[in-house]
Length: 262
Image 1 (cartoon, rainbow, N blue to C red):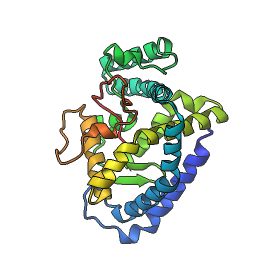
Image 2 (cartoon, helix red, strand yellow; image 1 turned 90 degrees about the horizontal axis):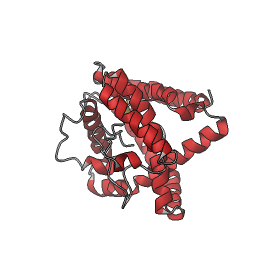
Image 3 (tube, rainbow, N blue to C red; image 1 turned 180 degrees about the vertical axis):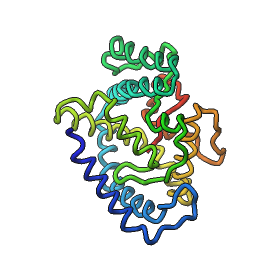
């Protein structure tokens, strides 16, 4: 399939990085046995973000009117409700699955292919379940923390889940041109949504890597438990890291179980 040429390449790079650092593994953090390697990948990601992703996101923000910017975010959030509905079924949560299906139907029709989040305005909750959460729900416990090149924080469990979710997303079945165009737009839009959060993080975190690791792991645990596990008060308000967070004057959405931030 179209995306697997790049996916295989990234996976090969990541595997080589793991193998190259096996001799110097430091088991200081129980969830991060690959910390020396992860930190190197994180440095690479930060440099890529500084010189490529962030400037592109700023340019996108500068030339995109706020209503259109919100519409793009809503469009991809509507697509994300499709794998969310499937994963709620996998977790035997039919009520939540029906809620996701309802959101898809309303936003795709009345909301003009998801450009308008009519479902949230109607009070229909937004769950955003993924396969990583489903695996955690069915007992796949803590797995090694990973920093994926060009992507960011994950775990082995969540990385496997991302591969599975790929097949649940209808964009993966479009033509090459449409797929890569939508994928690029989604990435740039998400990075633009996180511009302010990144600035706050850079100013507040003494050790950015450790902060993001703890934030990610705690947030994923909370998401798997449907918000029943509280995050440490010392960490930032998780709302600033939510993917597809509402922009400025956008209507708020229910983020009972939001996706992990990059």
